[in-house]
Length: 181
Image (tube, rainbow, N blue to C red; front, side):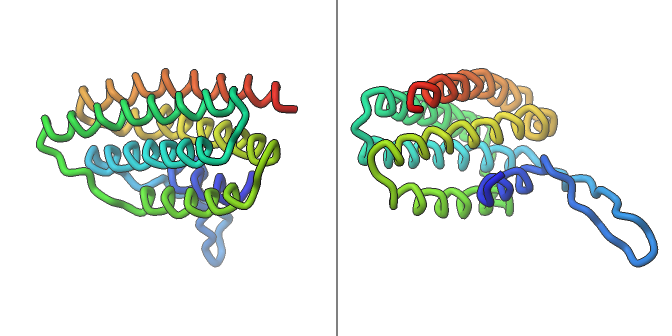
């Protein structure tokens, strides 16, 4: 697992944090509880990250299939984020920035810099590989942490709908990767 993805996994609480004490073996600590305002911010941040990656792909790639995939990512993640913003407005909830959102943004910025240095088929392959890994991580976080932690039924429903869509994105990216080999 590369460093940005490991940071994502840790940020989402997918990986346990080892707590080593002087005379006891390592004990896994539970991930800190998150509230709906934090979940909304994490989900929105994850969407913005994929829209930004898609915009970069549309600027750099000349491959029709990669460009079509990037257009899909931009369209779908923008639509889900628009729905999320409408929901938080309706509920009167202010999304709350948190260490997970900050870690996601930082890791994504690092990955964007790496991708920016590539071109041609090297860029296409790296972009699609990153999309596969990113969707696996986000889908795991949605199903394992964010959805189970959501208290509001409408937020939970939006996250569940997003998960189905993002699982299809992962499958699309995996199929696309096979055609780029």
